Amino acid sequence: MRDSLYENVPFTLSELKHHYGPQVHLVGTPYLLSQLATLCSKIEQPLVNTLVRTLYTELVTMAVNHEFPRKAASIPTRMIEHTPRGLYQGDILDPEVRAVSVNIARAGTLPSQVTYDLLNTVLQPRLVRQDHLIMSRMLDDAEKVVGSNIGGAKIGGDVDSAFVIFPDPMGATGGSLSTAIDLYKKKVPGKMRKVICLNLIVTPEYVKRMTTDHPDVAIYALRLDRGMSPPEVFSTAPGQLWEKERGLDDRQYIVPGGGGMGEVMNNAYV
Image (cartoon, rainbow, N blue to C red; front, side, top):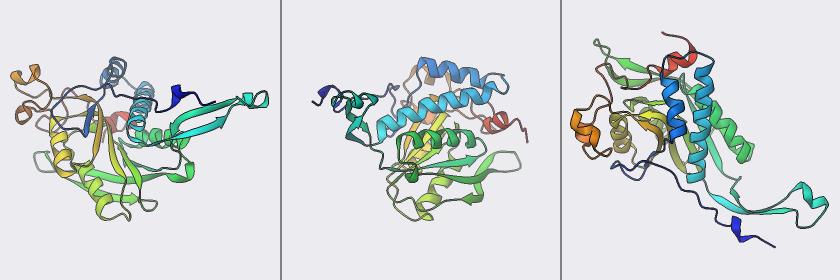
């Protein structure tokens, strides 16, 4: 007998209201925001990477629950040896779905590995892949970011019908991520099912760049930082005064932010 309790299992994101559009999800919870605040404070390894793993485990889980398709399943439990009723019958994530996690080195290396490993537990591993991009910011004489450069790539095949996921901790200007997504849209064979960006922190500038360049992309972020905005912004919902919102300083680092996460995570300050 199939129990209707587990048919069409509901899942609703807990997210902040904003005016950025339906593709943007600000999903920080009190627990995750507490962990993220600790990550952004003056801590050292191994706590840094422990927190990154925890945060990305939760972020990937939310995105998969919200975005990935499901199927009705009938799966024997260990009790099937004792009774024919030893079956779980109900919703599961459809395991026959393709997914690609893209590591944008170096801040994205650990988040992408966490994403890749988790996807392998719910999807058929033969359908899950991890790609690798080497990218760097291009700076002018005043050390202001003026673009992004792809220095190397290891892309393991096409992306036809695949969810392509970019786990990149800091969404600052959006330049690097926009360039990476352009690469997959224009140079990698196949039509992607959907692009999903997983960020710990984003700025209003990042959201503007991404929703302008790639309005089809879904963004999941734990926190929106707009600490360089004028005082009247802070009492408004995100995006209500979008033209006044600022999250980047003159060097285009996020405020309050957490510093250069690639440097912190790798203990390499160059």
